[in-house]
Length: 166
Image (cartoon, rainbow, N blue to C red; front, side, top):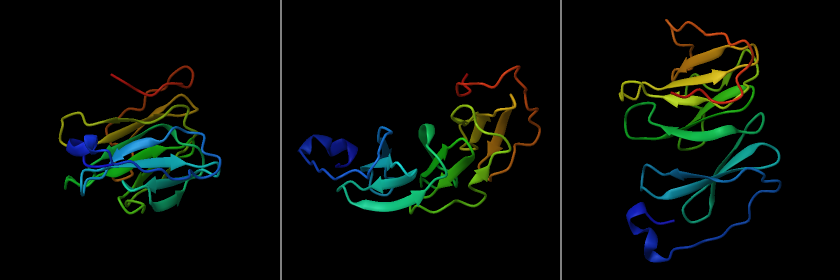
């Protein structure tokens, strides 16, 4: 689709979705030209990024279905957006070209029981990804792929089934 400020110009396209698509498409912003793009996941858990013209830009294999939302973050504080998402076993940070960002994917020590929640506490783009896991802990990861130091991991009496929120 056209840049956000020009969406009413009648530009439309259609493309065949990959086989077995069961998740609703995610609409993402292309930071280079401010157009909208579509991310879909197929039955083999691959994700496909469709450009504003409907062309498949890249395909990336995941280890399972995406849990919850796909988040766009500016990991390097340079105006370029990356995709942050999780499956039950991993957290992924994927760049504009469909490549892993350093430190990712993260293999979780226990299965995630809910989607990640992304926080930028101070508005400084120092993002944190919090993910509840099967042993009742809530893990807190920085965007370098490591556990956040100084965070005392709370342990719930039973695993959380919803993302962390405040």
